[in-house]
Length: 325
Image (cartoon, rainbow, N blue to C red; front, side):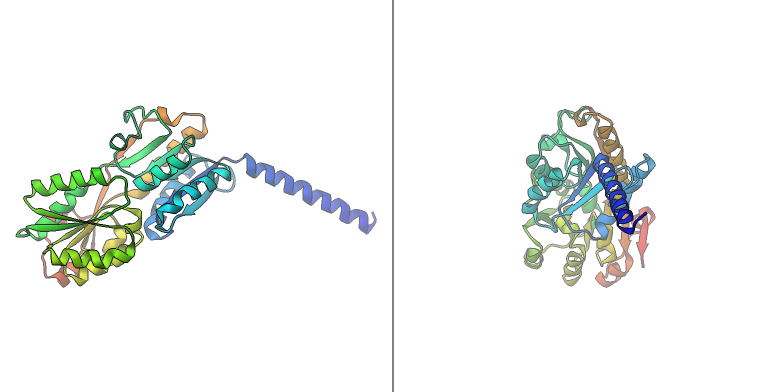
């Protein structure tokens, strides 16, 4: 065979192989992973859980399923465009968490199934007719709010406290629900509650200055992806102001926060994989019953407690899943 003929034959074979690989990739179901925050440790645990759930169901990334990842880095105004981009690239399902992201994704692509692994009560948000049969394009796992537990923890280490602060993201559409929950919890503990809302991390320092001026004696932080991506900054400010603090984020405690009372998001994300599997097999999202996530972990930072000059009651330590010393 002449060299020129061999090169021509080889080129044809490579082109044919490339065409087959491209066809196989197109044949793979494409799943979009969308998140308001950044690609940081707080989200990687959940992502690992989701991938683990897919593997248990027989999916191997790059072999029989493709995952496309998009992060808004805390900018809620980017979510719609990122959703549209994922859909334009062939995403058949959007997997996400967080009330802000769920709403933005659904508004941008109302006919695309959305599987959640965390967010506000879907009944309150109007995303489901019933938990057993949501009836729309949103399904998955959502969280049972644990805000009342946050204040109980703060009260146990500050039994004489009369005023707590609560930090919220002003742009979170779940705020009406969260406000109702935290105000009920505060009344049950006979404490005053100062709710401070911020729109972006640059406002955190001013928010803590305001809480200090209001005489706040402990602070809870509402679960929000923007806050999760800036857990270290919030923990540092709470320490600066000598405030016992509690958040739904394990990284918060590692960064110096006093408590984390957090859902097991790796578990919730792993559970969400089963919804993706059923939808890929033809199930309508509105027919898949939604689950309530209630697997919580309590983390305590004893070093921070020492710096704050407070004692963690033995009853709290006995309940802790992890204690940092």
